[in-house]
Image (cartoon, rainbow, N blue to C red; front, side):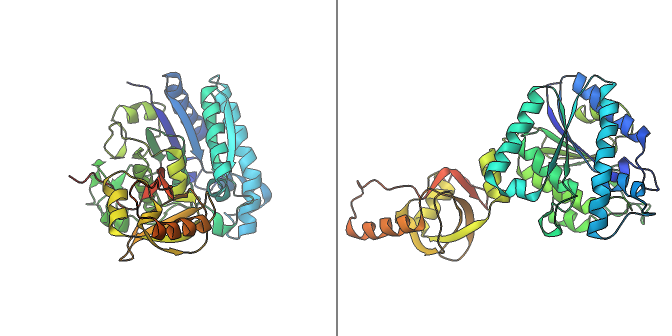
Length: 373
């Protein structure tokens, strides 16, 4: 088995008792499974839920709090309890865990996004086990990932993982709700995520978690788009991750499971996390060059500019019919672009070298690019 880089996401329901307390036996089991895959030569990054579920009883809540302040207070206590459990358990396998608490701002800011990548890469190089969770104690609702399923998908792309393992208390995806339909059939393999599947997947049935099967399917869709294959299912024994890599996991495999090209980190940031500063409308020739001939965007093909932007800002590009084609990082300011457009009316020589508005390496299409024959 070739060496792989795995992201393993463990949900709250997989780590806690029915009453919501942290279950040390479950923690120990997952740690043992990760230790086995790590000692087999693979790299592992964990996305671990469970902070709120682990901490709310410790500060006197009889049940999981529903207010934002209550959840954040419980997370502040529970995160320390969760990490202490991991430190003790990984220590028995001579492995060192490392904690990273991330927020949406860490992804939307390009510098912080790059720093997160550098930190994770160095930790893996040093043989540590990065354990990532959302910073629930300080995140505001409007700027959260929504659940750790999506966080795991974004991290798997960021770190260029081969496989994302989303561990849950259900053994994979079904063609109907298995809780209400005893004849529901399990789906063992899917090459890709369809709109029908997204509509079919339901919400969370757990009292201690936030992400249901719909969030897992959505996360799988995002991960696949970044070049990462996905497994969704159970992992309740020490050989679980070994079995998953061998194709014998108790769940659903999603993706081609070939060596798909991973979207470069810079393009991931542009595609998923950047803010749009302006929009450009381009003519048919520029559209053909961008989508079919692998070219950069030049001033000559731009019909109109909507908004102002600086060099390094991200701008959207549409055609004359208003169809969005993609987005990319500006290689000049909007003022410079206007200047070059005026210059274009002065000289029509094809020998006049055109400056680049959006470079090919910093362009992300909304539709799949093809080479036109």
